[in-house]
Image 1 (cartoon, rainbow, N blue to C red):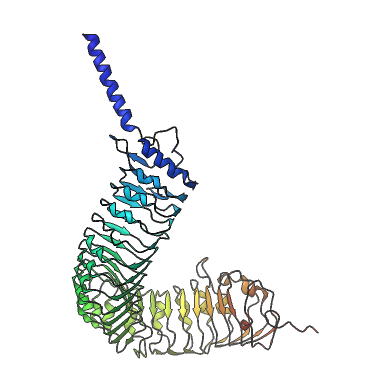
Image 2 (image 1 turned 180 degrees about the horizontal axis):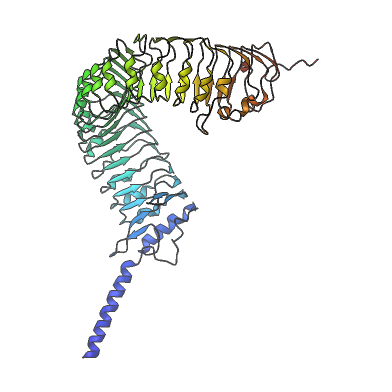
Length: 590
């Protein structure tokens, strides 16, 4: 009896052990499919598939493969090229093609071969057999071809990402995946209209079609996607009007329609986008006035409407948008005054109203915007005459008032500001460049071109150790250039990128040690034309390693142009009566 009990116990234990071993064994069909995929990979520098060997079990030993414990069928295949953890990042690639045999992984739920960079060829139509698939990530590769029509069978698919490949063709009308939550097709060459059947994807939360060649109109059925939080249709060829049905997307947080051909007015129904935070319509053909209902977006943070044909007055209701951080309305046809209600936008960081038809007084209420970092009112007929003194209360990082009618001298409050970018070009400023300009040590960009300044450059200019781009062209500046070329720098910051001093009255020779000046070490563009510079061109000038553009034409330079490797045109040296040598005619040494 005791022997019988022990025998039963032994047999029972053996059964459980065998059951365990069976449950871990990889199914032969799946094993063959995975090995065929590996066979199609011609380069695997990080050995992502190294553990996939004939002598080991695919369920227990192969990295990136997970199986169902009871059936031994593969449910998860994950070998992405970009993986990050708390203290590591793996960024690698694999070259090859997708094996049609992967379609035999009949229990597969997740397939992630994203970011491998070099998977080529089409997506095999056999992938349509993966009826249990819920997640498919093939983004950031070099896949070609169209979306297989067989994808209509993936009725359990929740996330589909094919972004950043080289895929093309139309999106099949019949592929209406009712379980789909996220669809990413950006950065391909898909074309044709956005199918009206998109409205059947009622569970969709994210739709990203950015950077393709989609054309036609935005289907009104899009308004049925009540769960949508992310909609990016930017950088396509979409035309027609923005449908009123867009107002039905009450969960929408991000709406990007920029860089298309959309026309007509912005519909008043946008006021119903109660969750919207990021709204971008730039680079289209929107016209008409901004609806007052724009002021009813309770969570909006960014309004980016630049480069359209919007007109009329700016609605005062925009001043109600307490969460707003950025307004970019540049290059439209807005007219009238800037609403004083804009002073209520306490979270505003950027206000760009440049290149419009705005006029009248800048409302002093804007002085309340203590978080404002960028203010650009350039190219508006504001008739400023003087820059308002209350500007000194702002903590601006960038101030652009080009072509706004400013006259007189630079206001002294600038000397104590922390402005990094200052553009006052195209005005009627005059007088001397003040000595206190050297106190503006935060400057990285300074444009005072097309004004009436008539002094020399003060010695204090050398203190601008962060200055990288300088444009003083078309003034009446005179004297030597040493204060500019020998200014201080904070390597690598403060090394010049570009200098334009053309159309002034600068005199004297060009510093022969210009190539040794730290501020000039990385200069790419140097324009000194139409001055009264004399002497020879220093050898070191044309040897500056990053110099791409040089123009010393229309001066009084003499001597032979130093040898240089860069291909500078003859026009860069012309109209200097005493200058010779390539690319000008050779010097006469007789």
